[in-house]
Image 1 (tube, one colour):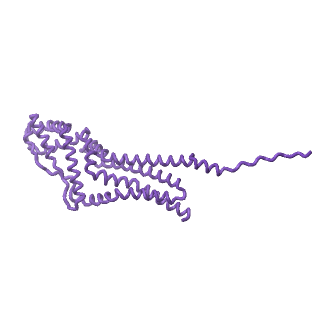
Image 2 (tube, one colour):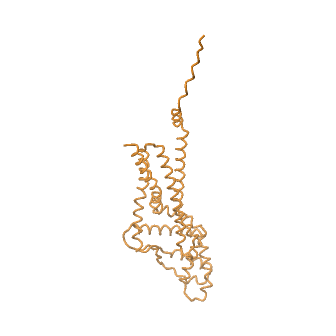
Length: 302
């Protein structure tokens, strides 16, 4: 294989490897991070103490309870602040944290079962356990209308059946790509370096490309956050949405900055060893011209 052909093949393989780096990290995050129930629950658990999330839960659950109270009751408006305060107080208890973890686990299991099952059915969650806890606390505080709060097992739809088909396809793609894209990126990078005519330059290009891919991934996560929060209606709590987004993408952001740090470290090491290493010094010494021999002394005839 000619030197020019080896250089072209190496450049193509390294470029393809660097292109796969951010997509491989994203697919692995979905397949092994979001899709794992235990990791998802552990990621969401700290949000039970986040003030923005607690306020959003208190407003949402409190509004839902007031909708279930008899309409037109003379004490309905007067009791609304008590209901909100009771729900907000409940969000600061250990029972709420346990309910938060249990609710996230049940919700995640329901979503994953729907994505792995081809049957068309909506994904729902039951808020009756939370309503029951709030009702008990209101009754203990002798709040009016507490006995009128119905505790019904109402299924709240998270995903409609018609929305599951494209989500299933996307999940199956990420499930396969989460393993094969990172493997393909490593194989292409190693092969590109192996066939390169100048391997040090190939290593340097691979490292810089990896750092660039990590930076692109970090930028994509930041843009995704901005777009996600912009799509939320004004009446929802955007701070709570931001807290949830940041918690879910924390691993992805860490992976992106690790790729940047790893790529820049390898690139800098490769450049320094190439410029100041022992082999580089020997090459410069061998390439330097040999010193001219000293001139012979002039002999003077007597």
